[in-house]
Image 1 (tube, rainbow, N blue to C red):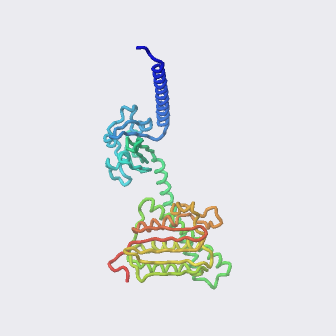
Image 2: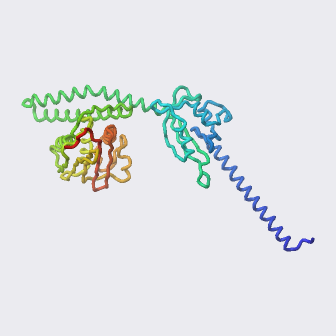
Image 3: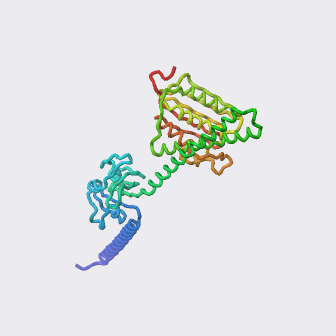
Length: 393
């Protein structure tokens, strides 16, 4: 049967289509090979261990850093069964509890969860002694959105943990060493101011008052450093007793307002009884009041309110001051962070008062929050659970 012109045209077009398909396939293959090479190079040069598992939790990739972590030379020596690999890592929580398989980031990632920056204790063949590992994991999705595997990245943060501990030990020792000389200096200054008023010239009295103020300021810094050290080591103990929160706020507010030009509007309930560490709770109230007075103009009004809401008591302090810039509000409770650094409103300090205050409130089972608008003031509140059968009378 002779080949017609139309048939030849169709064959030619089919041949062209086949060639184009082959060219596209070669291009896709080249792209896939290039991407695979790039990925392999990237994981090879990473200093952090990387593991990849498939949908049935079988290890499909372990980079050289992971091999070193597990103390093996070849990828074929890494247990492909994730369960065996987990058992070999002897992982524990920071409090010493053994980590179960269900808690492993890779298995959680297979369920669609993303894990970031969890720290654990490990004892691995590739490391000498106990190590601290910071690990993250994320699911791998296909184009349909189904989980087809997971990737894990670890980091040995042992040197950082050791440095943090060293800093905490130094702060604790230094603060304890400063306590006694500061107490002696402050005690003698107060003694002279009380007992020898007739013998003091105005200049001498002014000097002693300056020494007393300076000693008080250093003492506050030392106490803050000690509290930070206790918080970091989880040793902040509370001496609980029945406390009337409303009376405590009235007392602290009265002491704080003495000699200041701000107007205070105080609203409280009757008795608001809870179980708390009175001294530490006083420091929390002092902190929120100090912030309100420090960052609001003289003569402005500061509102203080104590209310009972269900099984909780709430204390709120509202000022009409400079407020907090929006870009800096997310870090307001961070340790050593000062929101007004570099602005005309910078009043000094270490930037730890709110960090400590929130930690104390949380140690009591409560919470602290704030709202602020730059140029219009700030509202700081904290809540605490009530204690006793008849908290409010």
